[in-house]
Length: 410
Image 1: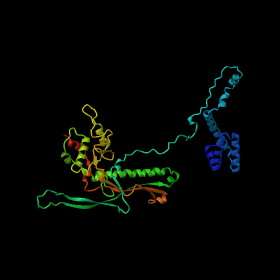
Image 2: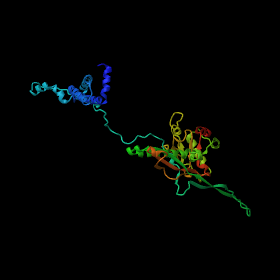
Image 3: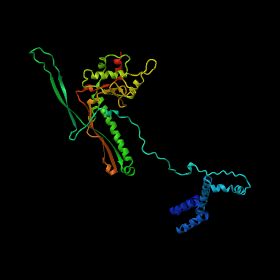
Image 4: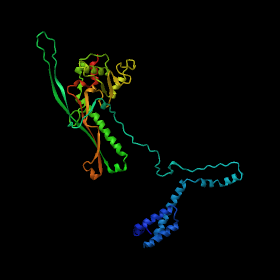
């Protein structure tokens, strides 16, 4: 039978014969059928299916299977670990001699050849619980300002009143002279509450099959909200829906003009600049304004840590504590959120962070979530930061530390 005739016969036999042959050849490979049994089974199946002229094909196929079976068996024999009993069979004569005391000693080297690869698809091991999370910046700025939660019925607005006209004319006068006249006036002002949002869709399968992921996703959204909340408290530009930020919106710029009016310092450094800005903030206004924090980028704070004299000996700034957590009466706050070579000094008592509520998380349907079997987790935080318009001295920013240090240097 040539190859063309063989292919025609294969087509004639059809799928049923092919499936039967595959089934029986697998049994033969496993050692459940002999060559004769395989041939008998196939011939019987061919007759039951009314397939003629198949004997030649069966013989050919059986020969191919036998070749493959022998290869596989040989490979398996080479890889198959020998049992202890099989290995001891080789020492049968030595064991008998030793038992009859014909030999004084008996040495047997037994190998089981079991390796770590002896288990196919091994999935056993130690599973470390929980989820390993990426790092993120810390959030020390959230605790610097007064916090006020708005009561119900706030209408999304906070009103306040500034004394905008202050004319103080108290003076001495001669007898019967007219008294001087002072003046005072007020202005009503307000700030609106703004909103931060974030969301993430979750499939029904995720929530149903892997419920342990739900708190992880909730924590993820909650953290995202907190990071953006802190970001808005510092860098918000007060352009709705952005919040008003302490640095970008409220802080008064400590300019080179202001720095030029102050006394000079020999070999001035960043620590000296912080002290100068703090003094300037309170000078003449100490009844109300007193700096209690300074926000620095970690790289800038390092410039103080690494101060050295001409002989490379480290220097200690007398008005900074050993832990580098306080300069004069100000708390030192390290934050990567503030740009290097800039800083913010302020009186946190006079800056208020208003909260409509805490961060809220809720599940709901968005757009075509229902038809796609999705549920969306949404986070919400509403509020704003207020430094009253009158209190321009409550916050000062330095937009170029290097230049301002040069401005106060003797």
